[in-house]
Length: 267
Image (cartoon, rainbow, N blue to C red; front, side, top):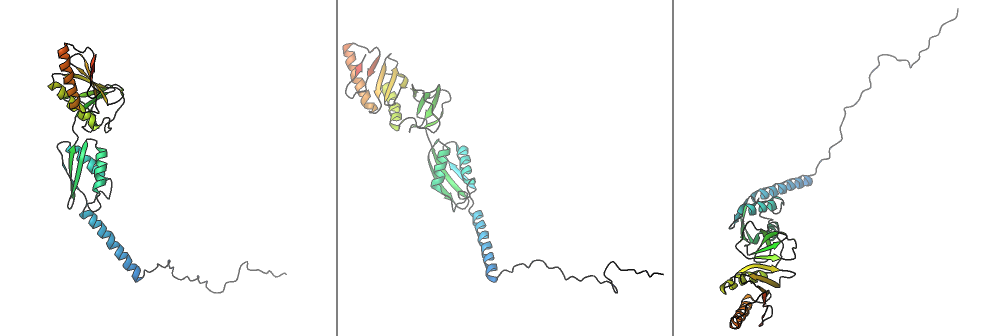
């Protein structure tokens, strides 16, 4: 009879099996701040807190506008400038020159602007508006010019000031300067001066340059002016020509040319 031998397939285990013991889990050690680092963090926090406090203490919240008109529009543009920039929104960092420059660019109707701080939360904006002085007709549209020759808007209805018709029909835009100060002064002076001499101007025209001005009159003829000269000087030449024409019993059929100093030509 053969003996049966049984072999274990694994390692023999003697006694009760004990689970492997594991130590407590430990997370990564947090770096400890030194005393100097803690002090620096505290100082940084105090600086940020002080900056926030100063920002709130001198925050620009009130804008007062002194103007003869358009107060709401000016205040609206001013608030856009101050709210859109953290430096302009605080009286400490507020730059008056930059503010005035950008406000005048945004609103072409402003002639002069001055700004004064009003501690602790406001500024006072004093604005002088441009004044309609001359009409400018081009492209079937009449625009309004300030006395410095800048377009300040579109004429609505009839106007009480002279209108110059630009024969070139060049397009213009609000804020654009289309004539010189001298030209505006000349036209503004020549119309009432002619009226004082018994001549009513019915239309004013220019072609290629503002130095030559043609004035259609109620007399049936045109007056040709050189706007680089003084209005009073040319009116004096016109009066002299009129006296001569009266003595000669003549009346111009087309024009009187006053563009040469001391002389006049008529047809």
